[in-house]
Image 1 (cartoon, rainbow, N blue to C red):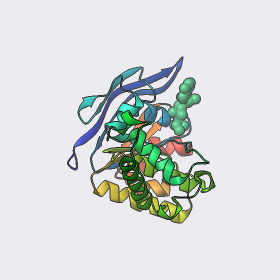
Image 2 (image 1 turned 30 degrees about the horizontal axis):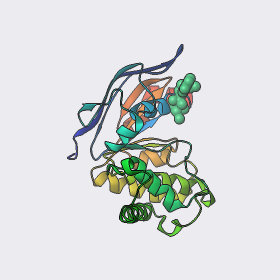
Image 3 (image 1 turned 60 degrees about the horizontal axis):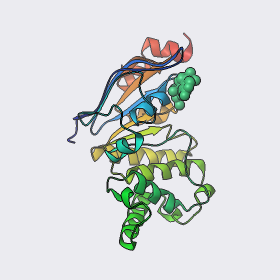
Length: 253
Ligand code: ADP
Ligand code: MG
């Protein structure tokens, strides 16, 4: 999609767990070539929002449109194959498998290539293509040299980058990142920010949940603030930072 095109449009999104309202009447629009951060205290409903957007959970109410189409009833695999890919707050790699294989498996499962259908019948050419793509994406996140290492031997921050490489194999038009900077060292955060800027400039839309305010405020185009399941503010980073409701929610003033 061309820069500025709405790629993800959410209306009236509500998720109840019994009596608890984890998301209440959320609206948001994400555009191609934009980075939007969702911030808010623990329990605000950020991961719940991501789970619904990625098809891992079903809204109680509301609509989600991706590239102009309703994704109601779509499972996570179909959504990922359509180009809406996510990483998880808690890293999900196979620790004894190589970094490269972890990425390739992701590409295989989530890619748009339809390779899934031949899951157990990959021929050599397909396998080679898959591994080459995985290597390319590992290099993109700065981990090309770690391809043959066991995934479990990497730092938590590096494992997060491996997850991003895995998501990138599907050539996503929307990338959802749940706390991508958590556990990263300063230099790793800078590298991640540079990568996300590059993706944005290529037209990818990035939606991220993040607690590191320096990371968020220096990177993103727009910020949405959630508290107790509701959106309480949205705007440019500088605007949101001085919004009275945001200050109250964070500082108790
Ligand atoms: P955040 O990611 O902002 O920390 P979550 O989306 O994880 O918040 O959680 C929002 C609220 O919903 C919390 O009160 C949490 O306990 C609750 N919640 C999340 N998932 C479930 C679930 N599967 N069942 C019951 N309650 C849940
Ligand atoms: Mg969360």
